[in-house]
Length: 132
Picture 1 (spheres, one colour):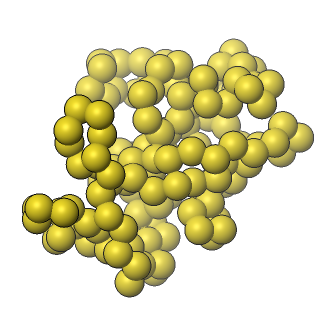
Picture 2: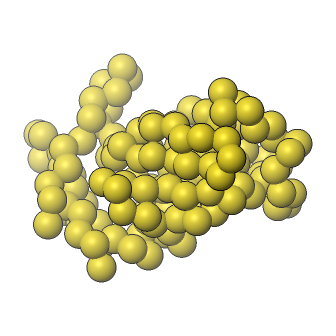
């Protein structure tokens, strides 16, 4: 089970980040970090991450609203692939207009991986991630 160290944010808080690749058919690919969030329903990205590939928020599939820490916001769905360590874990994901850091959630990342946060409370926080 790979050990993934927490990353220290500029605000002085360790966060559970992984590096992901997001590929959109006919548009291209972007690499970014994402927070492993057991409270998130789905992988969710900000449109600002996808705009350099030529996508627009209005051009994505309407998908109602979602509620998060910032309140209720409109969300869209995007067809594409998200991979961690070259392994596919999502074939579609949610997009909102503003999100400081992408998240991966229960319906996609946690459906493919077991995440153990038992090591998160130490001086050097870490999580263990294993493919199901």
